[in-house]
Amino acid sequence: VGWVLNSDDQTQKWTGAGKPRPELRPEDVPSLLMTALSQNDTPYENAGLESMWDFAEGSATHYIFQNNFTEYIESAFETASEFPTSFYGVAFYGQSWEIETDVNRVGGEDGWIATQVMKTVTSDGRVRRWQWELRRNRRPPCLHCWRVETIASSDRKGNFEPE
Image (cartoon, rainbow, N blue to C red; front, side, top):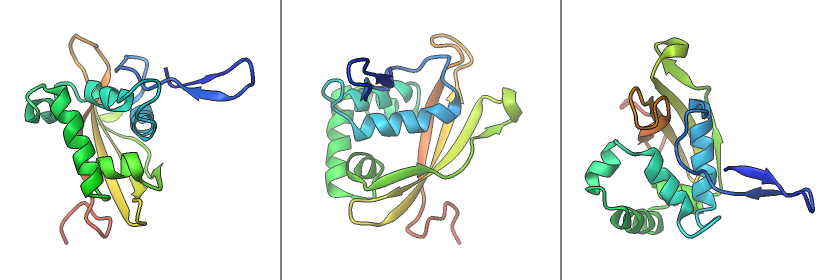
């Protein structure tokens, strides 16, 4: 899962983000999922959205869509096509993204909440920042797996707090 080396020609091949797993660190998750979304149909149709859905299990996303994966996919594509500055707009069609900050673990290394900020450039050149909030499962299933709790958008100036 992730990038693998093709032994025939020494090129790397994307094999998808897969599902949450205990060996992933919180700093791995945003990059893994953004890569999955930017290559959404690799290794199969909507694999990136499926991984995003799996990493959001237990969050408001599942509640909002009443655990309906099909409606979630339709909404992601509708939002992406209508709003270049939306999360799915930049994930699918944006020019670039980069991790802007180190992971901040609330409560230190043993903390179960982590945040990280990412900067994106939309298809039409606008900048948007995103704060990922990740939470580590403290009970089964997937004990100790990091999941996406929320992804908060900045305003058009890149700020998260009102002025």
